[in-house]
Amino acid sequence: MKQIIYDLAVIGGGINGAGIARDAAGRGAKVVLLERGDLARGTSSASTKLIHGGLRYLEHYEFALVRESLIERERLWAIAPHIIWPLRFILPHQKGIRPAWLVRLGLFLYDHIGGRKLLPATRTVNLKNEPAGKPLKPEFVRAFEYSDCWVDDARLVVLNAMDAAKHGADIRTRSEVTHLERRDGLWHIHVAGQEPLRARAVANAAGPAVLDLLARTNGHDRPSGGTIRLVRGSHIVVRKMFDTPQAYFCQNPDGRIFFAIPYEDDFTLIGTTDADHTGSLDDIHATAEEIDYICASAAVYFKQAITPANVLYSFAGVRPLVDDGSGKPETASRGYHFELDVDADETAPILSVFGGKITTYRHLAESAVERLSKHVAVLKSESWTLRKSLPGGDFPIDGADRLASDIQREHAYLPAALVHRWVRSYGTKTRAFLSNASALADLGTAFGHSLYAVEADYLVDHEWAQSAEDILWRRSKLGLRFNTEEAQKLEDYVVSRRCN
Image (cartoon, rainbow, N blue to C red; front, side, top):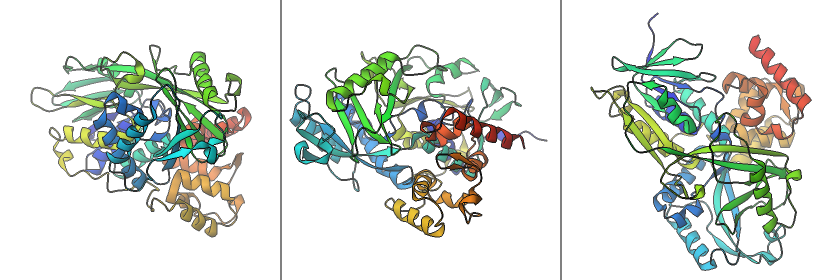
């Protein structure tokens, strides 16, 4: 049997890799995506979970990056309204850090440089007269309220991979690339435990491991210069601290900022930090010092004291930022750039992605594919990802509640909270695992906390889930609720199902 020659091999199953695979596959290319673990296993499931312009980047004069991000913000909301939705932020004014006029000027620019059309504009808030002021200490009287968007980061990755697969891409998780070699105008790619692959082009979207992958690559000449700076961002999750629908954006005296965000109905997510990461990429966690820092930061603003003892869960991700020579990790650019290397015949390109942020992934992917299209003819067709919704997102941006009501009416036996969670995870795809159900018993084994076998089966069959961890921490955030015994029951079920 003749071996397939792929047009493009994408290495890395984070948001940039999944986005590149989606874009290229939709242009008609034969694409394979290779991820050594699970989709969104690393940085792309450890973000602050925001689609935002990056208000703080304005003071570092990164106007082009902020504008690009703000333009993408409403575009992404439009193609994935089930997993992206608007969120208002309260920015309390802290005397002695940044003057109020400067903050207001920054918010004016934030409102106007990115083509905002649907999100409401900034307003000044008297916290004494607003419910949003109740969780804060009484010394905070003045604030500004502005708009950004929330995203389920790991699901965004999975949906891009699903759409890539819909367009013919071969998505391979648990597929570690051990060696690449450019030979005879093609890339020969060795994958642990699998037959070698051949591809006309490679997109190196390995995130923090981008340089490690290049070290395993023969037959290329890496340009001098550009490298990455590994910056770790940590977050904590605590019991719900406030009932207001807004999130909070707070400034620290050291110039850093942190967010406190409503999370999964019953929790609050607080973060992030910025620390240079020098350890293993296989052992990334929030350090005790970072947790202490986040708790101390929250204590300055909120009436409710938060200590490390209150932390239910913590996580950290390493951001592969462009090394622009910044002194402090928090000032390093969140922009991105590409390095492209081709052979003597201008064929067999390898494009490496340095930097990037989740908000700009779609535009990054579009730009990466267009760079590669100069060397791979099939990629020269028109860009398309802006016009097509992601799987499950084919409904109006304000239609999630209506969709939930329709599904609730069709399946009156379902608890409203379950329908809400499903719609916010799967959108119109919710109907895919309800087609044969007419009673709660038809959903199969109940693992606890509204997770039934019908959903687990769907995630194994259509979303590459292979373990309880994949389901509980990336396809959903139900890991916050499951105990060890419940998680083991789910793990046993997934393993037995994969073996049958």
